Image (cartoon, rainbow, N blue to C red; front, side, top):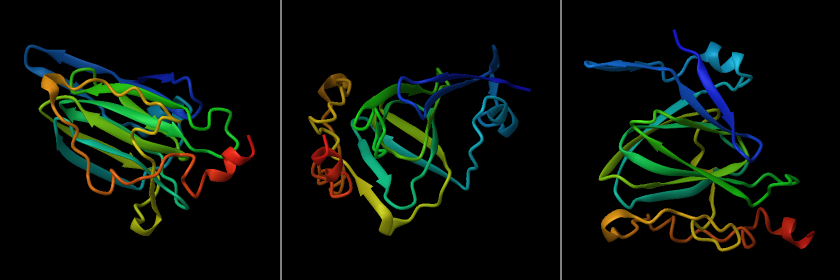
Length: 192
């Protein structure tokens, strides 16, 4: 069936993927993943784990990464609306510390592929959102890392929440350091 439209984001290693959607008065059909279409588009990653989460308006998850087992992620929204963000944390990258964000919704059917070497997070803009993602490596809880969602050195421009909804972060996500204070990346800034 299918075929997909792949758009490279301004940061190398990030891709917006738009699958074909076939709809009529009854609803719609789309292939959410087709390995051959991805390979034909030059995206040859191998996925080993699928995850799904549900969050309510104002929930901000992230910015997460794995230190020794970095994961590539293909993310999409099945219900609702989120602002999804990736931050380049690859040593030696010309875009180290830069971010890119995209709005993913149940209506636009966009997917976002985030290569290994990025921190990832998202903010829920709708009353609730169901979020699904495929990963290129398994989750290793002992390998987890994170960056502060509001780090001024990264400068993510998170959208304003509707109805003055407060942000809702886990205790862990409130405590991540900024990129300059992260023990993994502090040497990058010393060399600048």
